[in-house]
Image (tube, rainbow, N blue to C red; front, side, top):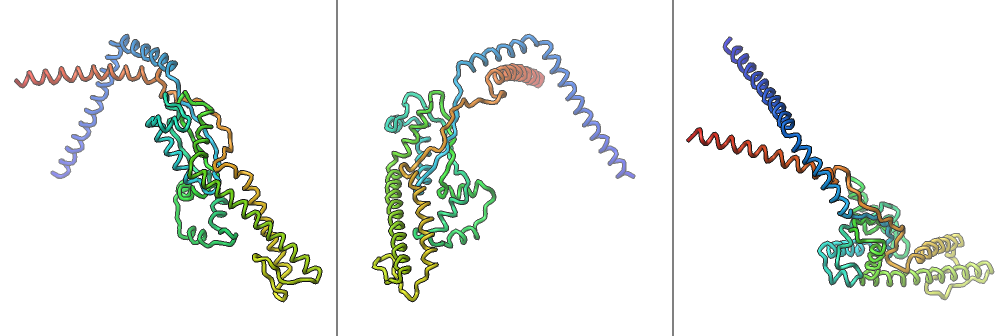
Length: 330
């Protein structure tokens, strides 16, 4: 019986406390409304003043710009490109005038605020890089790697393989002083990078050599087939092709010729883009980086002024209450 009475007292105490809490909240809301009604002219004045000040400040301040650029990286220069762009962003943010002047950027004002580069996911690029060696044979490294690799999302895959992609998206946040020439200077900066430049030169040379070697091999195959058809077949004097009459496979030679022709077509397509290591795929459209309405100054200023006014009033009231409490205790 006594246990039941204690439970009823506890529940009653809890209900009283909740009721008291709601009463205090209601009184606070009422006092707040009364305060706003008594000081409405101050609040309206602060709101109007904040809106006007924020509006004119917004006109005077020039918004940043943004641009998106699609790049193609040749000859496995993606990693160098990422490092070069990160260096450029750091030098631009810290206003390293010597570095910026060397590469043609403005030194009076900061043109580049932020650079973000990310690979455009294309698994075909990765597969081509991993599944073929220099002679075009299958390499089991890709199959082994993928069998043991686990990724949570596409971003993880992208970051792990970014050096294997050819196409990359570069997002710029630019200052108001930046323009189309700023983007062009970024491309010039990349292609003038010594490591990227040497890698591209070597890559183009190897590409041309491979095309020539494949063309020579195709020519030797044609000679071999011609001799075979004329019943005048004999061992080739070429160091690249050595066949013995009894082991000669007509269909195998034809198949090898098709492989070489297909490979040369691919290499010639690559050669079209080989003049530069970094190529601009799209022309970026530079636009103003508009902020959302709630971040505009004509919204934030009046809210800040009202908050500051209410905070000063609340602190003043608390100070008077504490002062009165101190007097009563003395």
